[in-house]
Length: 130
Image (cartoon, rainbow, N blue to C red; front, side):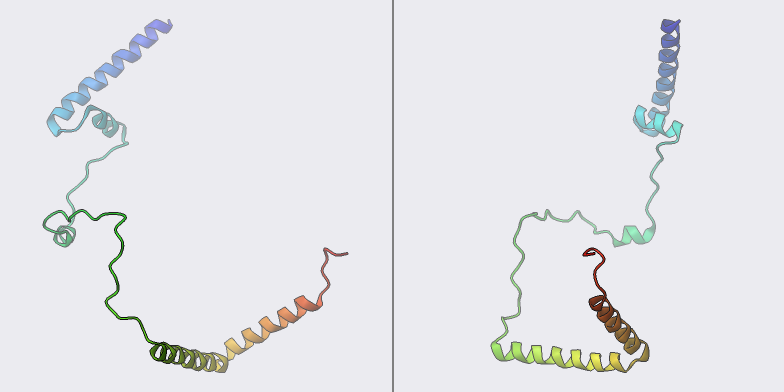
């Protein structure tokens, strides 16, 4: 009984592979892909849209080595005066943004709530110590 069932499965598998090989001869797919398409696990890839074809380069890009060091920056290193001037500019922008943020009522309320929660957390005794 087991031998006949195995023979039936083998015959069914051979028929499926034969049909798949006939289908693959027509479409150029492998027998495995034909069986997977028949079972619903594989599909054919369609042509890409025109904008994709236009966006792709005409020839394959050159090989890019993985561990190549990056190119050196073209800008020269900043001098101390230039660096301090840049830091001063950033600090002034930060102060201006802080002033705008503090003047905005929801931000001021949120900051006050945050400070109140911090004070509350410090003054409350820890439950783990009891």
